[in-house]
Length: 163
Image (cartoon, rainbow, N blue to C red; front, side, top):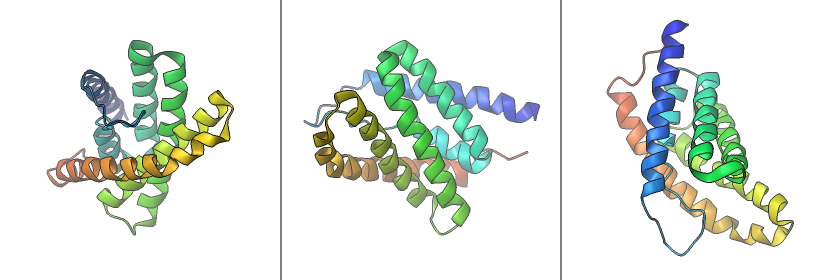
């Protein structure tokens, strides 16, 4: 138990560093809200190495601290909606055992954007933003694929030993 808590602290710190690096990288591809999702490498590795509840705890801690540092309360709402939904979806798909790490990550990236879009509908009070969903699903799938590749490499090289 103490070993897992220590791993969680280290992984939450790593995820926060990735969030900071991503915050510092100016991405302007003409579509707002698209990010690399670098911190999700840590979340996918934690999901496979420590399990769902630890991956979720790491992700929530990272989102809260990153929001306090970089994006504020509204950013926290977007991050939590996407992050919680993403980890839940990835956990279900992992448990099914049908998808690879990459497939699970692709789903996580796409579902993350669905959660954020749901918050946007509430905040903007206009369902019209849903027309942006195809762009977000494609970007989530692309970034999820890249994150999945990187997480798969970490996992294949030993990842985190559960226990």
